[in-house]
Length: 379
Ligand SMILES: [Zn+2]
Image (cartoon, rainbow, N blue to C red; front, side, top):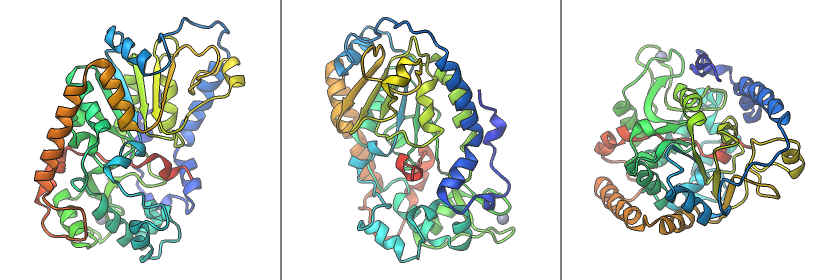
């Protein structure tokens, strides 16, 4: 489906364009071509409407589907919306503390912090942001714990996350079950010679607010968060190709589905057999009735003749708790939630703040895989 060679890291990250949009388009050009090709295939589809896959297109219908053991290989896709309740700051919003802090570094615009060209000139703002977002500062939400419940029940095929906060793995999800589509803090490399650097060393520098430079060439060292103009991790493409054809229930939570190629993933499950659920504050990834009637099936469609898309509009944690209640999973969910909260509190032992002292809990973060939030690159 997608050549894995397209996912290797570029040798010259500086090649990214200066505008976020331009960089995005360059990076994902190959994917968009693929999207177009597959989209045109979808349009040739027949006009017959399959039998509904859910008895109702809401949480009741989804719970019944799962209870009837029709879902054994669930893929969950998540975005920034699932971490809102954890308090992950939205640094893009003027007026928030973090954004204002970052302004002190003279960012031309908020997204510059994820541009390699800017990083090459001014790595300090990213290091400041990393200090804030480094795994360990925030506690997983009920939604993150829901992933662990699905995994414990042997129902989770994979979680694809756009978030870089590692809260999925902090909630107990094994690293192999997570695809951190926008990278994470698990690795770090020099932006000039690509030499990998020890993450403990990086963490120590981040904690002290110092920028780490490559011992070989003096270039700046950057954690493996995906910047604009950089390719997504190889694992993203490998798991995309392997997992989506066998998925039997797709659950999408807390994302506006505005960033490709992540957003396009929802179109890669079996359109006849695999039902989907969106839990989000607003509708996302939706196609028009005209497109639907024309045979398009990749986007969500909740209108007439919908046969497979369920929708819950609202807060992710509330939706997940309601679904778990219908499934009789409330005890498991709340137990994991309480355990995770206690474990993280014990490990951190300090509120996220300016104190940049010890960070010996960084070994904990070997299990983390942060991502970048959906709306980040959508502008
Ligand atoms: Zn170097």
